[in-house]
Each structure stands twice: as structure tokens, then as C-alpha cells.
Length: 246
Length: 246
Image (cartoon, rainbow over all chains, first blue to last red):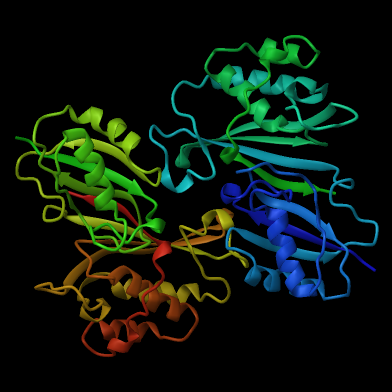
């Protein structure tokens, strides 16, 4: 039978992350609870990426094997009634018996948003990291250019993840300003991301923005030198999984 | 001695409104608590407008008489450390001994935001009213034009406020679409607003948008006929006090 592929958005503020765990509510846990009501039996879902505690998503993807067929177009409305209002299913579609939300993902797009106003903008505080003051944009863009391409991102990885290879390709590392909103936004598009990699990349770029780290040091971290140029891990609220591309 | 004039922004979701009350936390209450820490004695503040429970502000104004002088530019940072993170003081300035935040206000600008996406946009859910589906924009703009000018807004006023006159002037009633965000935004600029007036105006305009009310009925409500054309009161989360003009 076809599997179901869900596209999910969420405000991660109140959650311990996407992946189910014992000590905190999770996105996966809430989705599985709602699906269990609909299918009247427990189900397991698999997400495209395990967003951390406090990280958001506009286009997370998850799949599951349904015990019986329900027309996919009916699922979002049915699930959204059952889900808390900080999790919204945007789309459901039949996905073929072999689809895997994580293994089949070809690219992911993450965004990291900085609130550049002098005092925090209250209405954006859950979705942006307040980072006012000096910001050497040309220097940051120079460092961003060095991150593009295929590199060994070993230094930009937090402990706690076992992966075979730490080589990843970044197709896009882009900095955009939203002047009306007093926001700056990083976009990262890559074939995959290591544990905390985006937040550590942002951490390095923010040090560059203050003149505390040279772009060359970031480049050195990519070839196994100067690992101390990687990080620190930027706070979770600025990060959002925008899209997963298959 | 000079009074102090504060410019304040807040996410009203967690509050019973601006004005202090017994059974719920309020913006006024939180501001007075923070000021009491700074001045080491209780203070009373007066706001330009009493936003309701769940209503937000980007530019609320309040004044108070300080027991002793503290340089105004130092106040925002000092207050923001003490305030919860859903209230931010943007500015403080000396305001002259006779300044009154409410009586001296010449105009106020309110915005009401509609989320027009099919499913609610999670990251905007606290600051927009989810109103998908049919929307007859030309008809709404016709009704909006009729609201402009000086009228008796008696029908667009909820019980519970005692005012001498219910005549107000609306200088601007404007509908703007933010297509990238899938939002529609009403702007109301007037010399003053009655209790729940903006939300009742929006309630009428939303009925017009669905073809359930004719623009002429809205106009009739302004001349004492057809009071049932006023309202219902639109939900609070879409409303934001943008600016107070002196």
C-alpha cells in the first residue's frame, strides 16, 4: 500500500525537538497522537530531519505507513483539528510504498533569522535571534562564499550524532536583509546537514560579523585546521527548516 | 518636574489587556512593577489607549510622573531587563509637566491582520486572524470608503464604556495585501476610537467580504439606521495599536 507523506509546519518553541523523547513534548509525539486518533491504532512516523528543541519548520516532511487507506486530501483538515495550534499539517499525499522522508531527501533549505532592531521586536521574538549592533556584512559575505561547495564539515558538528561521512555540499549560503522588518536572514541549501551544523555555521558567521574571526579561519576549519573557528552554536529560535527537496 | 513618556510594544496574547485589573496579568501592571523596582516606590502610569485582552501594540504610549529624575535614555534598557520578554519599551523621553498620554493624543493608528492562507500560518497565529476562503475585495473597499470621514459610530461600540460623544473621524480606512505573506491588512487612522470599535468595524467588513452584508448597510449603521450591520467583534489577536500621534 502507498505510504503517506505529510508536509508540516510548526512553532518549535514549546517542544523538545522533532524526535520523540521521554522528558518533553515533541512534534513527532503530537503528530503520532493525532494519527492514532484517526487510524485508531498507534503509528510510527519518520521525519526528514530532526529539528532540535526550539527550532521551527515551515516545510518539514514526514512519512508513515497507514494501516488502511484514507484519501490523502482529507488528512490535513482532520489532523489540524486534533493537533495543538503550534503544529499545522499543510499537505498530505500518497507517496509510493518505498518513499522515505529522510533517505530520499536530496536537498534541505534552512533559514536563520536575526532581529537587527535595537530592542527586540516582540512579535518576532520566537522566530528570530536578537543580534543588534556592529555587523560587518562584506566580511560575513566573504566567509559565506568560502562555505559554499563540498567540504568536510567535521568541525561544524556537535557531539552526539553518529554519521559515516562528514562531507556535505552547500549549494547556497546566502545573506539577505529585510530592511522594513529590520531583519537579516541567512539561507543554507545543502544535500544534508550534520547535527547542529547550521547553528554552528551561524555562530561562526556572527563572530565574523563582529570582527572577532577572519573569513580565512572559517575556511581553515573546513580543511581540518583551526577547528576552534567553528561555532558557537547559535540559539535555536532563529532557525527554521524551510523546505525539503526530493 | 518633567513627566516621562514611554513608547511600548507588546505581544498581548498572555494579558488581560493594557489596563490593570484584579484577575489577570496586564501590560500596565507589568510596567508599574518594573518602574517600582527602578524608582523604589509604587508608581501609576497612564496609557494612550486601553487595548483589550489579546490585543497587541507596536507603539503604545504611556506617561508617569517620576518621583526623581533619571536620564530618560537610560530607562528602556533598564526596564527591558525587568520586563517579561513579551513587553519591550522602545523609547523613553521627558515630556513636560502637563503631558497626558490619553488626552493629548491627536490620532491613533490601528492595524488588523488577516491570515489568508488555507491553513493557519503557525508563526503568525498570535498576530493574525485566520480568515481563509471567499473575499470580495472590491465590495470591502467600497464599504471601507463609506467609513471614512466624520460619523456617529454609536452602533460600532460595545457596552461598558461611558463617553460623552460617539462622533469620531476616520482619516484612513485602508486595505492592503501582503501577497508574499498571504496576509491582508486593514489600517484605521482616526482621532479616537470607541470601545471595541475597530474590531466591530472589522467584523462588519468581514461580513461584507463574504457577501453577507451590503456596503450600504454599513453606511446606514453610521446614520443611526440598521445598527445590526455593526459587528460582530472580530477576534483580538488580529489587532495591533501601531502608533499614537501627538
